[in-house]
Image: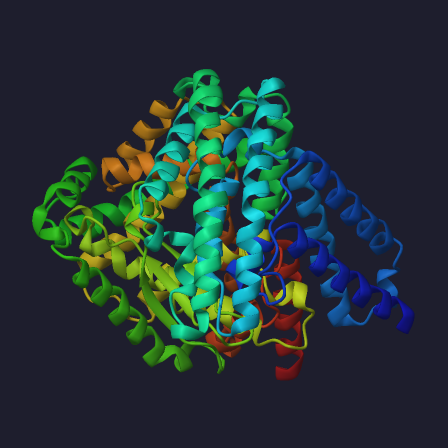
Length: 568
């Protein structure tokens, strides 16, 4: 083996990590990566072009390495880096966000609101970095406006629904009094020590950031909303370059080579497979095996909803505690950060997902968090929140992402990953919703109906995402399909569809990833027979952190062969 090849790969890995998080420091903060909390992204086309050039140079040097010269761990590192570098460059080259996400979920300003307040501000140096970042926000927001204008001039127009969401989000933020500004949050602790930083931050927010937000708001209202794509043209295929961009988005988010047509059919097949489970469990729990009747009962029976926010928090906290209590029976020992339950800011509630996970800080200064929507509890289905907890906390995202951070033998670019390998990350989360059933974690058959409800939702995603972005479905057509095939509320159907509109391809990752993990588990069980150990299998899946699905296949197959040889 050539030591220089391994050394060159190590250099490229470190360079990519730096380029990646310098280009998107908001995501670095969200992932708990230290060293980038003073930066803001450069959303200009010039900024994107500069980052593209850096990544392309990394790819060029990576391609020159003879894989045969690498040791086995570095072969995996090289495979992951190859896929991640392509994905990051492709994402910047197609820049679907400039015409798909002028919204309140995945737009640059939405990421600003979501990520900046998660920064760990524990000392004066961190507080200074935070103030430095706030000082850079006006230029960032003005550059976002300019990027939207350039895209619009090329007829790469955002959707009307997305622009409307962005307008509502910004108005909600600006309606807050200055002392309750979301972006001031991390400096509100620290007592007198942080007082000088709070004063400077308050001045920056009032005199610079809020005026920049008003400029963005004016552009959205006066320039983009009048020309935005209507609800019958929400798919990314309706903008120049959209069809090619969507093909790349599918490959990036699923880390497979499946086509839109194949994924669409997989979704239809999954829904057909779920029908028998719906009927059996519906008859047992609700006294009917007729799907429309099951859906109607789940949607409209007030006894199946929460009555106050504390019930939601208790449900997900108890689910996490049950999972942690039996974790050692199903997984190798992982010394991971704690996971807390955190309520999503009510300002974000109108367009928020039911929950999301925020990783712990790599330096231990911040725990992982299952962030859960508790606003309007009477609109939330009580039977869904256990499955949600198992997806977001343990054994789902928290166990996987927090354990990855502990794998210090891996290069940093692999220890801190999320959306970059969505097929694995979200596939694991969805796998864990069903795994929780095997683990005996659901408290009732009614909660197991919630598990089915989420399965149906993820299967629908394959159909409606490809339906809108590849086949040209209208927003109403996508909403109707999801309404007909799930038990979720009309409001949540709209939120889900609007999320897929704004982030083409991401919603495909869940079911595609879960199916691959299950396929590999079946392969391992068939090959190993009585020697199959579920703890060891989960150790193999989690032991290399998040990886593209084709890399995961090789990891699992190698593990299977190793176990088989040892037993011979």
